[in-house]
Image (tube, rainbow, N blue to C red; front, side, top):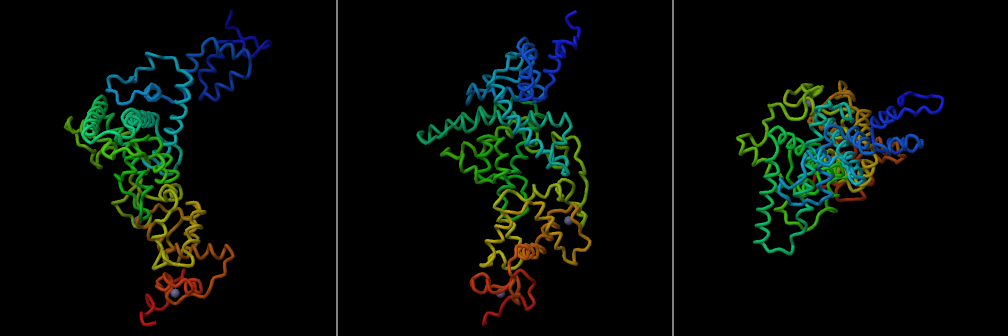
Length: 452
Ligand SMILES: [Zn+2]
Ligand SMILES: [Zn+2]
């Protein structure tokens, strides 16, 4: 029979078995390498290329494949500013089941970003102990679908659709904006309320990442942010928020053009309008179960030190999530945590900033614990701390840690200034700042008397 395995001639003689292996490969890279290993396998692939490619796409992207494909195909077809009824639908994968090489290339790119964002989402919103996604399959599918839908919204009604309005007069622009808002609202109107909540959750997660990048005083993370640059990031391409996570908000300046801000400032308002029309709260109250995640690990854990009941679980910080808290360079905000007048010390502050930039979050936070003072005897590196406790700990140790870095770096440490970190002279007399060490406790009052 045709299906008989003939090991003596070829271990791949069974075509059905080969198809079975090919359709179970996890990604296109594996598929490409596998079909190139032998002519027999290549020939089997050539007999069923479409179904094998579709299976591998499904293995890679998972249950959110219809949403991912809808996004890449609408982008490729440049369906900008089209009414929702004229866009390709989630069912396009059934109507046009053959995946082109363009589809595949785009799928792989967007999938990689969404996958990375999912890990970040999981770390921040589900399990603070792991940087890789711990989402259950159902949670992961909900996250990914919502993410692709948000990307589709941005691709069709965002920057690509309304590039540069500089040559239109204000009346034209006003009507274009009106039209845009109607199209955007109709788009959201095509989703069920739970689906809208999921999109909203993903949006607020992305806004938190943007807020983290623009935080002035470390480590306060406001729940939402509406700065122009943040709004613009969502308007351009939500998955690029990953770049902001890694490199900071400045990279958005490279994307910005002269689009009028009214086009992107209220970019997501259509979603809220649809919810309100459905007599739903515009934002889910915090005490209600939040969308996407079914179970938060350690949800009700308390701060190891203050045991505060107002800060729990996901807002506690320890070795596994210190690096989320720190935000991208240049870390100016950490400098603001220095005691007294150190942040304006003329001799060392530039060097302090350089040392900080070269120190990973783990080295920094872990290092602070290495210089723990006796008042903190009961505090441990492994503690889960609330923001307030961690900030207090940092304030009390940052200068000691830095002095330790100087010693380790072979720098000579001059005698201590009596006024220590509180000395005012260190901020306006470079010679004084260089002559004495200020990274120490004051032993004589708070500051030099003004007569001296
Ligand atoms: Zn605390
Ligand atoms: Zn001094």
